[in-house]
Length: 115
Length: 107
Image 1: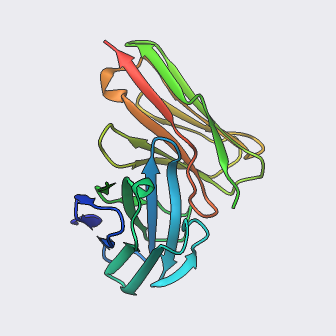
Image 2: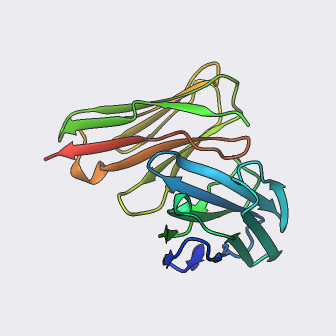
């Protein structure tokens, strides 16, 4: 089991540029979550999918953020245009059952720095 | 969505001392999960509590779920330097996390 795979591990970009973060969930997991972690705001849920369909995107900060899950094995989180305040560690996680009924398995995260 | 409040935010202990973190919700939870994140790492699942008043143990860690299923606690007996990290609770409805308690242990 390779676990949840995220890429890239680190991303440094300039303000205004488009950023795309990628995630491959564990095979067979029907739920996929995107989180953002900062010192000030802690671990924030941005969006989660069930069977590739977005279920709750109320945590997405604003229209500059978008997430897609074109198939069961791949998801992207895109920020366009990026701003310095988007600097954070972004985690992807997947689970077998609905939220709370089985553990979340987290990827190693993408550390995003926007200058 | 509902949110869980976690206290304290930070805890610094001497190795060998005990440690407790608390998680409180304003609404009744179906279940609650606990995670540990080592510095520079990602959250790792520790345990899930489901039943009212449930108590579970993992070696030196003791997890409790309140009778009203509105609060939970994690207690570590005789902390070790390997216990360093941030401990999070997560509510079951949509997997929103508490703010976490950062534990540091002085050897």
